[in-house]
Length: 192
Image 1 (cartoon, rainbow, N blue to C red):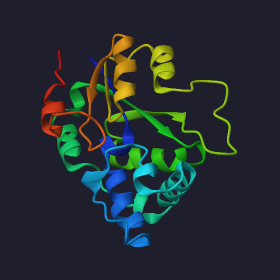
Image 2: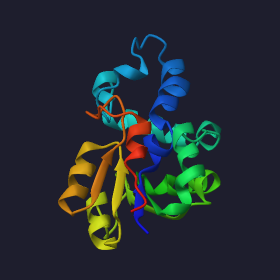
Image 3: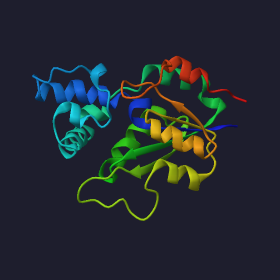
Image 4: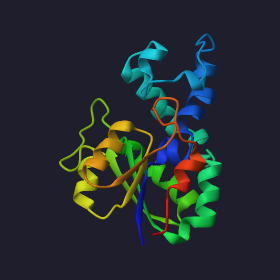
């Protein structure tokens, strides 16, 4: 049975879109950008703010009921309903340590039938240490050593996984170069 590692935010859900539409735009109505215009992640330069200001806003959203009530990506949820039992699944997220419990709760509520482990690499925040262990998803994947397929929206993470001999699938988002649809990406997951 193949083991699939899933990034949570922006793969299993639509965090960036919902944060942008439900938090950023209402607080910055003169922004002038649409979600499809977010060609960089992190998007702080596009938004004309510091990286710290962007991360603070995103972290505030994570702690709000909007994150807790965020629905799963419907295409991914449908795929799990039909195919989830044919694979072993783990989650691998880059999330600040102070919000990891929030991500884990969201994950288990929506995907706990299939994804049984929550793993995270601390996303650095000012005033917090990343700790002595893994500092990147590549570090975690190297240590774990049991992942066959890795799905993420970050191109560097996909390149890193491929360097380790793991099949990487780049989840389509405006900030990456994926030309595939979500359906096409999920169709590349084969039971064999």
